[in-house]
Length: 481
Length: 96
Image 1 (cartoon, rainbow over the protein chains, first blue to last red):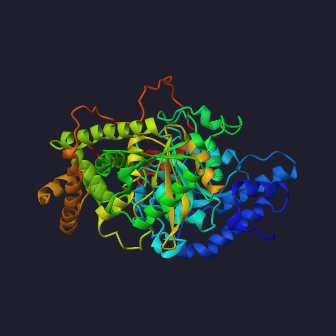
Image 2 (image 1 turned 180 degrees about the vertical axis):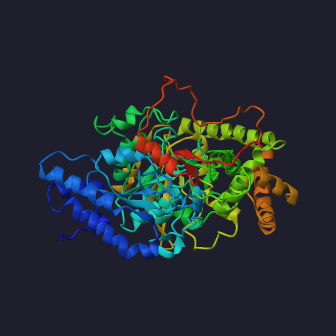
Image 3 (image 1 turned 90 degrees about the horizontal axis):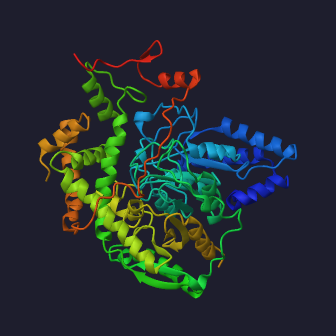
């Protein structure tokens, strides 16, 4: 078998290697599967492997190459899918015992799009149960360890997807982000990850957590790879009526891109509320170094204010559990999944859900039920939705003086396994700088910018709606300088 | 602290059967979270409308057409149900 540098392999390099016949797609797939067999026992990024599918897809790519045909954009590139995104005929657990033996009957739109581009799908990755958590410790099947430090969490909820990429067990992966679930694990594992604009990517086939906040997005080692996958999965889908047409994004590179980004015209807004006491000073320091780099390249750094930041996490922990309590009502032990028999229907529901759901999911369902219940609806839920408007207005105001905003992804560095799991509120605070972006619906990238205390730090770059392309350009400036 | 009877009521509304020990545990864990989200009382929302969705939600129209699923797909869906009979999903009676 040829020597392949797994860690140096990007989508473009893999493609070039295949076209130049340095290696075959089958060889690449086998090397990744071997690597997973060897390393993933320790890291636990995958819940389910799909070797037959992967090898079959790889062989199909090799046939195209042998015939001298053009190969699509992701041909032969091994990837991983978060286990709350449906892959036809593969187990899909959402990290929950309630779906332990559930097999998906169709492909999510994003999976269908990856398959069309020749993707080689290695398997499904670990997550906090129903994507609820910031450390992947809430998975019913075990914790994912951070490849950079095995004593620490990989972040969550897309911890498996981030660890698979960081550990050289996939070239790119898909995650989902409701309050930071792509950006946080990307930052903790030292890879790049994008939460797209709400509506840019179809949610069809994503197991719903909070429907007005959820977005699927890519994770990879380089911004260019994130962009490639994003361009493929983005676009309107008749199966998701909240998805919108994004022609500018889709054609950005094919059309040669818009006018070149002039760094001297770039205004980077820095929200003062995202650098307050309580955060890890080492994280803030690394972010400031990154900002200085942009300043040296010619960008203007402007201070902006998001005055309602102090309410964001509270609004998030009303709106997202409220939506979750409704979305998770479908797990009733009747249609699919774990089921507890009982004398009557009501008891069957109660027992199935009482035993099938894990602790954090039950906590959030109860929280959501509480804020939606008679007497509390106006005080909590309606108030939170009004605060959501204020938060969105804050961003729109900030974007009047800034083209993009930059901040830490999280106030915290990757923490030790077990450190926060007993105290839900301390876990929630890890997402302090990411939840607002979901409430407002904007796109944001987590970009690795170096280390503090030997652990990766992520820079969050927030853009205006559907300006992913601008975020990519700005992030690439950092990578190449 | 949220009263125990409220936790019981919510658990029942949410269709979760919980042991007395679990009720006590959730009572202990939900209280600080409810205290924390109480910070919203300070927010000045007098001029704010509700946002239920990050983008202006527009009605999306389509023809009212049924898609014919293949027998294989229908079979898979029924197969996923824990209790089924002759191609149908079995459910306990709702009304007595």
